[in-house]
Length: 129
Image (cartoon, rainbow, N blue to C red; front, side):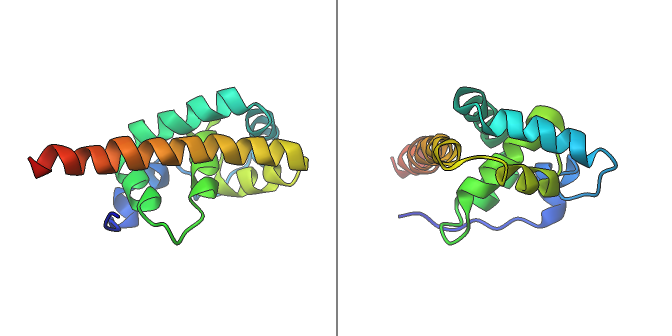
């Protein structure tokens, strides 16, 4: 369907934003992440923000169909929305109930579908003609 794109981690916008760093505000980040992950509309908007504002990281992560793209989107959404680290967001995930997780995953699936259809395949169609 489409080719996997690779970029060095030093080029990833999420890396440069501190998503994979350590924090001394873990509990604050975790609480804010729980709030965002529990709100599918806000979460979807933050995921779209990350997918569009961080094109290199998005391409690296969203063209890798063998990875957990939902997880990256959730972590990126929390980072771009309120500066949360990946560790705080992963910890927040376990505070959600099954229905909230399903809603968060559905929000991610909508972004993944948009990315595949509009960004990847739209660009292929644009350059094919």
